[in-house]
Image 1 (tube, rainbow, N blue to C red):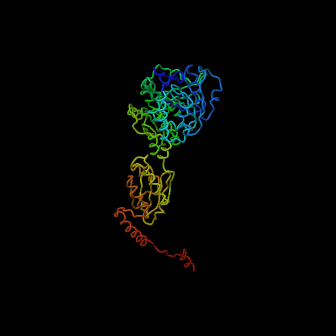
Image 2 (cartoon, one colour):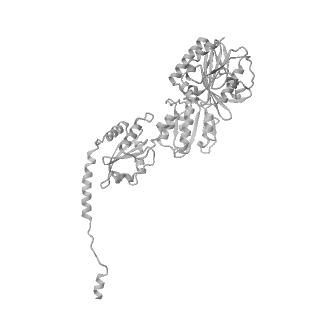
Image 3 (cartoon, helix red, strand yellow):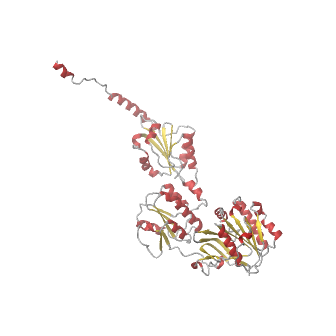
Length: 520
């Protein structure tokens, strides 16, 4: 039988509480105090004859073991690793010179910043080299990384299942902790995508009573479960025994971290809740997989087109508009049952927020700045093709210059910019769809567009907008329809002639002049 080492966490599945030999396991912990407690717990769980070695980086091993705790091991070697990149690269060579590593459990307790200078390629190369050495020596290495930087490590290690035998994380939740197992393999098989709630006790970390199951299942049967923020039902009680209502989106998100195929329904009332909701959805999708059905119901008018794109890019399955009645909303929920999300969700949510948010600009811009801003938006790959916005060229009515026409234009949304070129007013309306253009223009201009401008040309496809912007930047005259330009000169001449014909000369008139002559 292959040798195994005990992880020490009680009341979790047996397959997840042991480590095989040889093996390479990694646990990321948010707080150093929690990592120290887990490390002490692992040491205390080993048998008297278990070969063990502890390596600490950034802290002395004596500080970790200062408090007395029950341990069957009579002695085990302690080492200190310098907080340097070179120390990690030569870790296996240093251990070979000072320690008999065969069939031994090695625990490396280090701050996550120790790997901060590693690129993803360097981290993969280092882990691959170390994994081969562990197989040669038939020993097991458990890395406990803690502190700021663990989130970056999680992202870098999330795809290294061919190198690591196990990857997990311990996240503090104020009164308890969540132990998320990305994957964990032993000689008996591999388990993945499991979540446990852990509590602290005098003996260390332990799972809740409902987590103490004899054996894991391939997938939890929670597909029929529907978790929702209570306001989405508009005061109605839970619709069935499978429905669970929560007081806030925060509580719903925490409960959703324990599911893998349930339906989660968030409520959205105000636009300032969108960023927080985007982080909730992104964390759920990246942590719990593509089996979740994540729904956002808009309870009042608060979503722009760009906000919808952001929530969908973060992993939402469905956005329900506020105009949809409750009956239609429930029908939409039925339509997404059994679905699995097929869209890719990027790991970096900051890149999503920066890429899907409107430009932090609005109003008038010089032609050069206007061209650069629109071109940068056209090159944004996170936005959908032919859905980045609409550009309009407006020729003012006779007697009105392009610069004067700007006083009629009020751009309130970020991302909506304008400039003047070739005696025309150019508008770019970010994330505006072509079918919403007329509505948008009514809000932008004080006067009807047909009265203030003699003609207009609209471009909504990315290729056309990019081509016209480049011509504008090079000061090349745009080839607009001639038929719409010729009548303008005629109208201008006619307007001037008509004004001259209707103009009247003032006639002087003295009041009461006839009355005065009669008296004399």
